[in-house]
Image 1 (cartoon, one colour):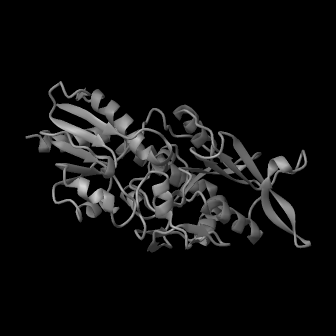
Image 2 (cartoon, rainbow, N blue to C red; image 1 turned 120 degrees about the vertical axis):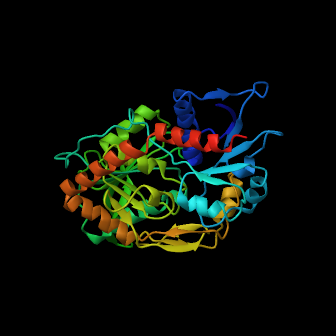
Length: 378
């Protein structure tokens, strides 16, 4: 089989799923014996576009396959018309299959994303005797991934008085800040004559401050091996996103054996459940407007438009599309549940790792992709 590699999205940030899927699927297809063509001057069977529909440009006279995904319950208007020029649509999950079938009358097939089993290896863990108990978050710096909400949840947990002194939220992101690592540590802050616990920039605190709960935001652009090291250094993983086309960072975290907390909606429902981790189930679907956290870390809509912000960033219009609202108090309960019985949490993490390595490798994705292409080659 010969596939024309027609288009794709590059980068990390908001297109991590697309860029990782394209790079790893391409390698897995080559390993499976597929010939990848990158010139229109060579013969090919299908033109493959791993891209958002608004950037889809079909190859005239060819059979065009577009592999894409989305996170809410309806598609942006700018995506609908370009889809009509595709011959086959490939999505990563059942939720997306049902969504795209509302707009596209041709075949919509599922090809799940995967992990590199040689990179995202299982890591034995134990409760730390010294140093922080690290809850890791990995994602783009936008509201959908929980970037704005999670620090507010951490502050709400701190105010309950139940947060252990060694708890750390480590947030790994790109596309924001200036490439540095910033540490926010708990301190007592004078607010209107009274002292309150709050997270403060550690650079503003006295030297040799006591070890207390912290939030670390890592803005560095790091290679995959260092990202894997970061997964291995953590004790739990948390992804309270409002919607996922698949949830690749969750898969990667699970592959390393991390006990995981995630939003039980969208893509993750295809591969994750409470037999392998700690899903967030207290959800409500709300219109997709700019969401900001309240005092408990719950997302509430504001007058600002998330869609307008997205357009300004060059993505797409998504005003009014529903997504899943998580509950900040449930996130705190899940974190406390993991810490209260860490051996059991590790057992679930091991089951998750076994599932990822058994069923969700890039070689599995490639085999399914080949099966789809063979079915529709004329």
